[in-house]
Length: 229
Image (cartoon, rainbow, N blue to C red):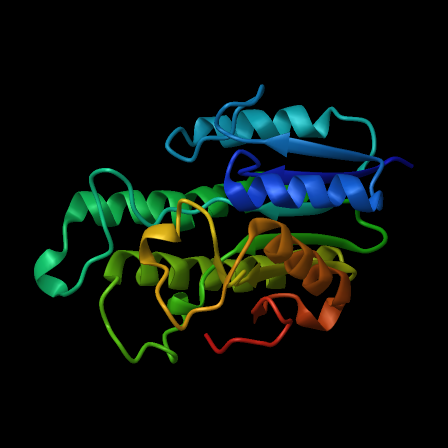
């Protein structure tokens, strides 16, 4: 059976690098790249697009063995990470939760049922270490932190449900580290290990390759080390 890999957010810096790395590895017969600009599109600001894309995926020949959600929102021309509670803005929070939590949740709702019931398959979504509640010692970045924390909880719940019908399936959240992409570039500073997308993609894929069924529902960094929720 044809083995399929799907990258959501393939138009971004890391998503593009992940797609290229998967193609180069040749572990899958076909790498499907989806983004806001593909046909069909996946745009978390239009949640109906997620269901339409999942319906399209269900009609593709082959087994979906890997899905990587490489989407995320940290800042744009209007919103930047908050320095304090005084900076909280409901529209900013709404956008962060829509793209970082609600969109991926809808992706899991519609895509996890498409995974084959036999054999190993993986759904991985990119989270962030700052989404760890226990690791938060600096405060700030409230919308981003909270939305990623919500994502981690959604992954845990989805993994439990997925495991009831497919004991070989793995559903995880991954922290890719600080990557030289437009998302993190304005906030890269001295002392941080900033890596090019190609290296970060190779690390993410190496972590995915090493996952076992026991890791499902977990949150891991780019070295494969677990991160506390």
